[in-house]
Image (cartoon, rainbow over all chains, first blue to last red; front, side):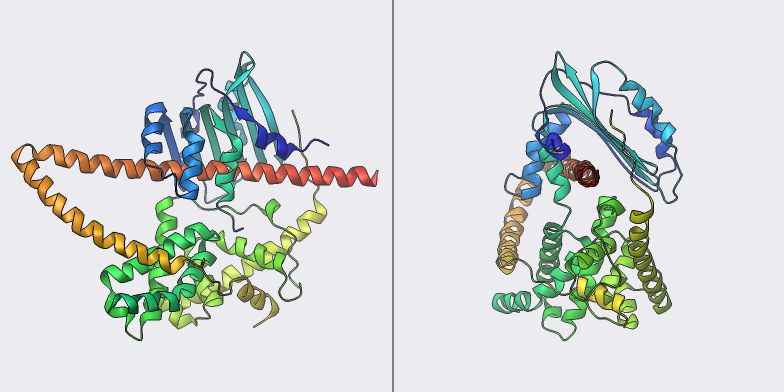
Length: 164
Length: 174
Length: 107
């Protein structure tokens, strides 16, 4: 049986054209957040930040590899003190943008008030962008990556936060 | 203090400093980085402390405050998702590795102050007065954090087990 | 102390850092010494040049370095958050797959 985890790790978004979605709708959600992380980095800013990353440091080396061919990295991450501070419906303006025919979902999971979706944008059959949406009762994370990225490297950065 | 003496201090107390950071972050790489910075701080500005009897107290205090500052500066918390926790029976036999791993993850998900209290109480065997002095916190606040954090951890562990039994997971695929 | 508290204590027991930890600390103390001497010397030179040529240029460079460090830190935080979510997805899918395998086995 095909392993879903294997699918994620082996999927690589290739270069074609930039596919950026508008995250402004999330500003409304972020007003009530107790903790905010907002990132808007176009190609030049990414390159500048990547130049400061060390190739010898484990975490930074992987991060450098993850972003080296990205032309845009945009993220909103909000945490809330109280559950129910936002509604899943508030994500509709984001999800509506993903209804365009070039966006295809590869993961869509909803359980107990939690929503997790990963979408890939393709141009002429070639993947060239991704969106990650992870929403729980007290947290929202939306990430839009434009350009080339290796999802296994990105996942590895998440594993760096867990004890071996 | 000579370089050799400083090295001796590092070797003697590296376990203490590293353990506090490791238990706080549940992240070996970050713990090692913070532990190194604590000793550098000792080297650069406080070498007189290293030769005194209050070296251990200074190291504990510096380490825990640096851990708290690191979390606040990064402005994100490591969320622990209940679905990721392994089965954690509260009445498991001693030295159950799955139980310990689950508890470590839960502790690392606490807000920084209660987390610091738990790490110092159960990791360093400090009493409430010592913890209060280290964190510059009233003793009653230390007790409050301890009681609430312990009760919450115990509740989370047992609730997780109950939820796994009662509520099947629904998953939709596109 | 009850069993749960003993479990907490066991989970937070003392652990040793990597074997080369002390060596790394000592290496950084040497770097600190070299840097502090070096940087003071060059800061003095740079300050003199800046005074002679333009004080603004020196300040701009320092600000750029601070800005670069801040950007790097922000990027690492954002990538870690994203990576953490990707890992959650992976773990969740593995768990779903295992449940489906078990259900198929039952059927």
